[in-house]
Amino acid sequence: MSERLPPRAERRRRTERHILDAARTLFAEVGYERTTIRAVARAAGVDPALVMQYFGSKQELFRHAAEAVPPPEEGLDADELVDHLLGTLDTKIGELSPGSLAMLRSMLTHPEAGAAAREALARQIDRLATAIPGDDARLRAALMAVVMLGVTIGHQLLELEELRAVPPEEIARLLRPGLLALTGPEVS
Amino acid sequence: MSERLPPRAERRRRTERHILDAARTLFAEVGYERTTIRAVARAAGVDPALVMQYFGSKQELFRHAAEAVPPPEEGLDADELVDHLLGTLDTKIGELSPGSLAMLRSMLTHPEAGAAAREALARQIDRLATAIPGDDARLRAALMAVVMLGVTIGHQLLELEELRAVPPEEIARLLRPGLLALTGPEVS
DNA sequence: GTCTATAAAGAGATAGAC
DNA sequence: GTCTATCTCTTTATAGAC
Image (cartoon, rainbow over all chains, first blue to last red; front, side, top):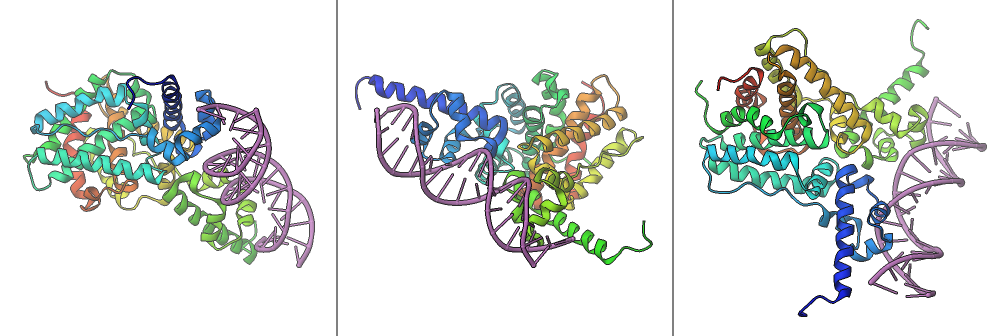
């Protein structure tokens, strides 16, 4: 529209960002239900009414704050896929975005977050299934996805000491054989 | 106390049981926050005040309704342990009690449920770790536990079609190699 | 544009009638 | 012992002042 942002719009965008950051943090920490508009506003240093002004409703604020975990790349073979999956452990374990954490945290108790999680998993399963052989490819793919999900939940949300004490590569090393076993029909 | 239960106490126990059943179902379906005393009472066919009379508070009702998943048996060797773990898949997948589901559902968003889940996992990890060799036994045990957790969540709470479409034995068969790989130091 | 004040709804919990 | 009625608190959301 205009050649440069007017200070007004610029300021507005900054405030909106602060609100979103605060919302992501709180949603990620205590989930949808226990996060109040008031608490978000306090954390962002703004007025509660302003949050409503910007986002319309708590539901809409959550929709903007929570984001789905991106699905894995396409066009990889089975082995590359496992490596890629394990490579995301750094991300999944070390630096998972607050937006993704917000989604994960409320996944089991907030209907919309649950639906979003199911969709994200379905996409991930689709991608995985195309890369592995066998008529039970989708089942194997689903198991790979929930294995990663379990590790992520245990590490990020339940904060199990055993998992937090070691670097992601160590966990990746231990998980690799199991995931590889899931990629192909076994011998027995 | 008395030789036979007076009808009064008997009736009271039955009503209490109805309330607990209704509470377990609702807590398992929608979690702690979205479950209201009123809804529990309605489902149990009693008065909301009666629920409070019996259990004192919503918190206390949840404490009675949610139960931890029992930890695996002691004194097994590594292979037996995996078989036992996979054997519980029938239970974990087919007929997990409403009380356990209630705990799992609220695990990520209700502080007390989260603490209970962590403790249950810690106990399970302890048992597993004593049965497998290596100085990273606890880490391996933790990974085994979160793998099972991921499968349970995917099946019972997120209700992934891919997992619900097949019998538990099929899932157990596919998971076995991966879990076995986690029990012992790998060759490479 | 931002905040004050308040409306409207729903929750858990309680006191007392029956 | 069980239920009616209500209290009190907290929330989201809105209307209007500045």
